[in-house]
Length: 345
Ligand SMILES: [Zn+2]
Image (cartoon, rainbow, N blue to C red; front, top):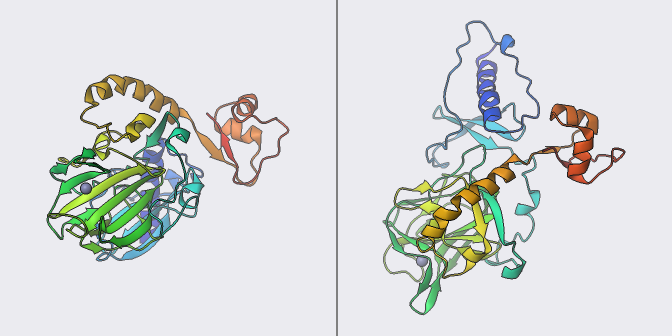
């Protein structure tokens, strides 16, 4: 058995064991522990923690190998590190996120009015990859909300020109542009969870539109371009084009994510709704949020593959055909399409 094969087996075992613990659906687990050589050393590590920030420019990909989870690949780098990378050929939960209202020139391509946004929705901030990285860490110099006679659509974070600015979550670059009278050099990323993040006043842009990015990837350098006095990062979070206070999610002083699942309420889109102001209410509703998030997390889907039948899907998911039919509003005689999403829980 060659080294690469052994490594693949070991890594896959790690994925298999940790991924199932994290609730990742393992589509095909073809790793058999008995097939490992007796003297194989299983390297224990915690692979699902968010990795250190990395500059893709300086690190070369040596190899990409599949893991036991269809949606994840293991990428080996020439500095002897590796990390899980999403296999973009496999459907993301909502595959329309990166096609619908996808515009690399218009900053605001959405035509969704506030009244058409649900009263509240659950947004997964970190999935099984635990992929999050602060955009920049430091003192907040200007908060979201009304500022003088205008509304400040984001949070300003103090930095030095040339400091790295990181992608917050995995996603895809939508906009790279320069707006002299406002944002200066601006990057807009769209993420798997549907949120968009804006990075303004940059001195350098290191990505291009349509490029996939990973949380923690350096996308540019902080600066003082556009309408800005003093180097800082102007950072926005938007859902369907509507801004809300990024401090609801990120503690910029420590760089920590405040929560793993976020209950985004429609009331948050008001410029008068700030994290700090709502803190009391926030704490009170946290219990309620947790309950709703837990319910959402309990929902599970299966993507129909070749040869699947309702009966087989039911057995594999420890449920019954009758329950599957109820959950999906289908009949036992319904014909399954390849790629169809069947709710199993
Ligand atoms: Zn700002």
